Amino acid sequence: MLLPDYVRRCVDALESAGFAAYAVGGCVRDACLGLTPQDYDLCTSALPEETERVFSGHRLVLAGKKHGTVAVVTEGGIVEITTFRTEGDYTDSRHPGWVRFVPDIEADLARRDFTVNAMAFSPSRGFADPFGGRADLEHRVLRAVGDPATRFEEDALRILRGVRFAVKYGLTVEEKTMDAMLRLAPTMDKLARERVFEELCKLLVLVTPEDLLRFAPILASVIPELGPMIGFDQRSPHHAYDLFTHTARVCGNLPPTLTLRWAGLLHDTGKIPTFTQDETGRGHFYGHAKASAQMADDILRRLKAPTALREEVTGLIELHMTKLPPEKKVLRRWLGRLGPEAMDTLLTFQQADFGGKGTGLPEEAEEFPRLRVIVGEIQAENACLSLKDLAVNGRDLMDLGFEGKAIGACLQRLLDLVIDEKIPNERDALLAEAGRSAQ
Image (tube, rainbow, N blue to C red; front, top):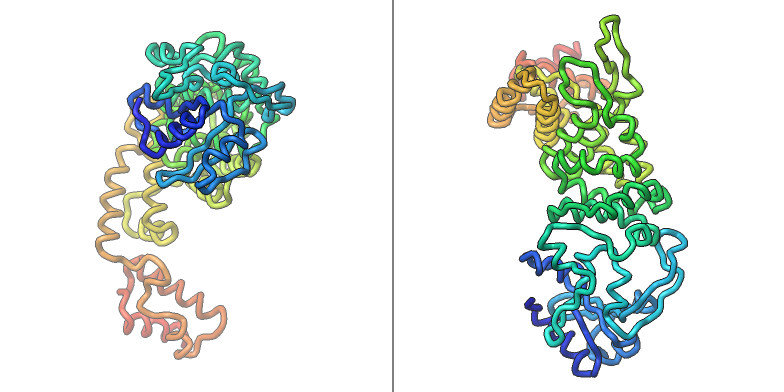
């Protein structure tokens, strides 16, 4: 394993001062997989005060000093250097009851979550891999360090982190580890919602439909509204899959942006409360788009999601059942209302929704290429789509004698006429029409 020069210099400085020093954790894992690490953490036998002295000529960040971490600002980036340590019981499923510094690397690695993250490397001392992390990587296995239940009881967020590692690196979760993840998943309700949301965001942009199905019970532990959807028979000729399988296919096949993936995951949560059956036994979900948008809003508020993301997701969900006919007049209005980027996002989402039904029937899905062609034509025409595109403005109408709310009403009427192609978006024509309205 080759360390960047700025990291190697930190290791050498500690070693020259008589302390053991290793690169540890994710950077070692990624290097073993042939990936380029994004950052490097070091661990050392030096106590925090000793690390401070070794790097006294550097700018230091000491916010984590009480937990043993000294961050050194180098020309290549910040390198966090943590003293070998062990930890006491996690009474709040997040913070250790106590931290004790230890003299050897193995005791430090024993406190880590998974074997693939419990490896360390020193240019002079070689690999430290007491729990078989390299072998697990070779066999594509995710295994907890020591007793799985103990690891997850220490910090329940490790359960979601385990899901992310399995998805990101194509790992199969070892049986005892998976059993503990499933059994202890309900304890994640003690976690700070911000931590859960952050981990879910990291996960959602990685998942495939198969990943979502594999880990559905764990996801339902942090988003309970997903639970009733698992295995739910929609009783509809338009759907070949149960509700959560459809959701997984939609979400996992969307482009990996947070707005689309969150919308895909939550877009049908309102189907359960709106479900009815007719006399033939066929299922219906009248009003489920609006109900799903409200539930998504509640979920994302609970998870402390940013307002902008929450509003984008709920707006997309509320519109996902909107029928968009391949007509320029209608599409102009939607382009004016949404804007080109949001319009493209809506079409992408709707196409994925139809594509996740699994019936093999074309239904409306065959219309999406045609819709995109028409939208492209409208954009190429530089069509007038909103009030700001009109060739006249409020001041022009004031010169004609319009006042107050009448100005906005007239501008909207002129825009409607232009969109409907009843008058051209030309100043003289618009003023003439406004003048007739004023009479």
